[in-house]
Image (cartoon, rainbow, N blue to C red; front, side):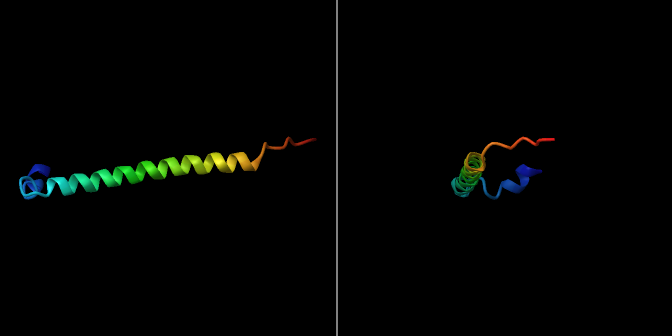
Length: 55
């Protein structure tokens, strides 16, 4: 089923464009993941240690 839908793109020169779009999408996801981890690390560093509750 998927092959039937993709036959109009295969052999027509769109393969490189499709692969470039997929590549950019994956690279963007990876960059967002790295930025998220860096953001969490920075906020934990500046937040400080949790204070203990006294009774």
